[in-house]
Length: 252
Image (cartoon, rainbow, N blue to C red; front, side, top):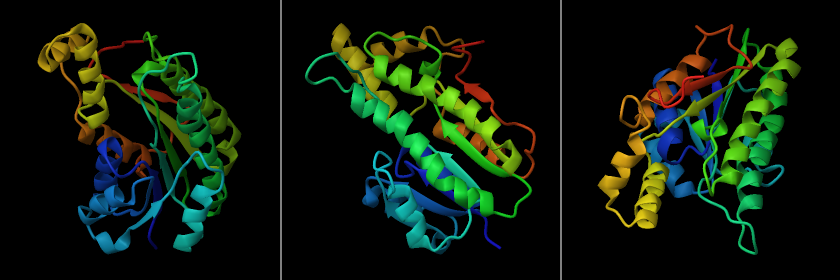
């Protein structure tokens, strides 16, 4: 029997790398995201692409994840990777992005998990797995990023609460907090940093890496491999935990 895993935000970056890793592990994937073209680009790169499906989905809309599951005729889920999210700054005022960022990163993730829970509860595996992608900024304060920091910090409380609530269903729920990762979103942040300081992108990168002991970004594949472990049958004891992958930038 195939083991189905739903991944949100699977069209680019870390989400795409997670899809590649989980496909190699033999999972059948339900790839969700707002950009169907990006999802199709992910799918064709996967091992046995015929085993996977793509679905346009906006996690901010109640019922969108449920609709994707209905279309697959999937009766149960072994796992969920709640990866979809948006980044960037926000400033109080008429154009404040607070609501957009909170509704996507925090409320959208909450709705995603809730709509997947009945499918996870039905699965016959000894343990079912949920991984929520948070961020190092859940633990740090960054000027101009109040919405992003708040949304990502909220995901850690959500992870702990849901893990405690659904332990009786044998659903293990954990969060991953990446630091700098070599993705388009990260480089957009570097470019914004460069513009604000009127320096080159390379100079901005060097400045951003100064507080990082290993002096580098992680690669998306590194995050994906750890997510793959959290979803594997080898892992049956971690739940309600937050794992930091940040090249030493934060050492709690």
